[in-house]
Length: 221
Image 1 (cartoon, rainbow, N blue to C red):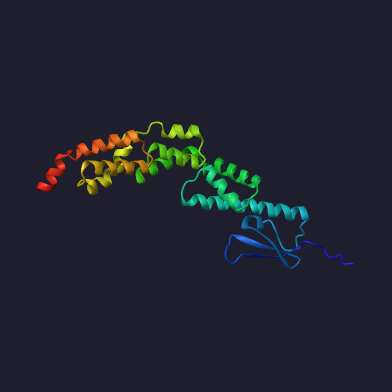
Image 2 (image 1 turned 30 degrees about the vertical axis):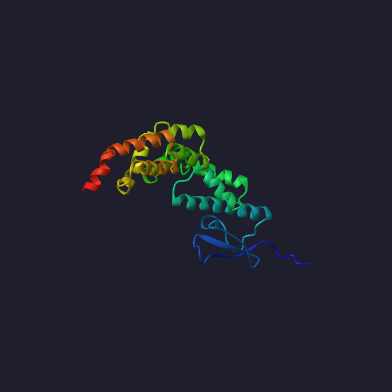
């Protein structure tokens, strides 16, 4: 009968592709990997019980989930819902996801109110979206309705629409009024602006260009 001890650490080796992770070998065979910090508490010749092994594996899973979330947040700010969905796609257990989310929120890496403010500012500045479109996008990101209302209720829809069409006016200024109006209203509609705001913006732009007179002046030039 073999009385040799089981689950004895025979080797600890840094991974070739990730020097912050350490492979643990038990009884001469690879068993699992842990972070460098966790490995600091292990040593060759140490015998691990089954419960200890499971605890080490579980801790490593939670560390990997957290680090994955941190990398995901590194590209741009994210909503809580986005991070949850990202971790679900990687098939992490609900309790692991909940722990990661709680840790990220505690460290203010996740903040839906701050995310909503970032999203609105970014989209308003670079994509010129209307309030309706912005609210829809925030709902898709899982943002609470109260935060959406708080973030967007003071936005000036008319000024957003006016800013949105500025880059296009130069290419539309040769058009006659019906075609000009169609261009402006279609452009704004596709960006989530309502009919009334689009109509008002079209009229304002047409007047700024000089109304029907600018067509005559163009051909007389």
